[in-house]
Image 1 (cartoon, rainbow, N blue to C red):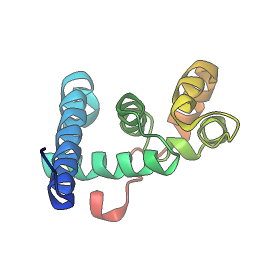
Image 2: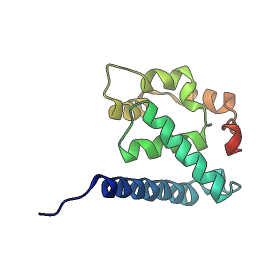
Image 3: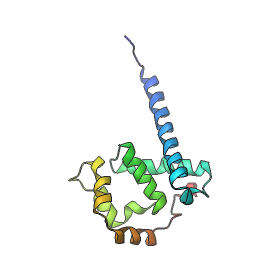
Image 4: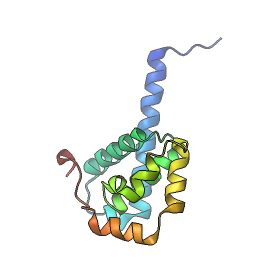
Length: 130
């Protein structure tokens, strides 16, 4: 019987995380080039990693949710989730965490998005990521 040691499992998980970050960066470089074009790779990787961490603070674990959250950080602003129109869905305890992004995307209005984009500071990243 094949046994995977704990150390091996940790290495697999670390590599899976690296692969996922790479896929989000590729997605941003491909589909949102105009938004991330001026960001050097090292900073983009740090920002994506930070965004994934922030998304997980809301209980998001599905890759599509993590990817969507990070994409919105770049498209709207790194603090988009702190606007009341979005925060209420991301923190809604009556909705399972991995269902929250879908509800957010369905229930927010065009006006919510416009207001967030106008009020957000696109360079409001933590200092070490600027």
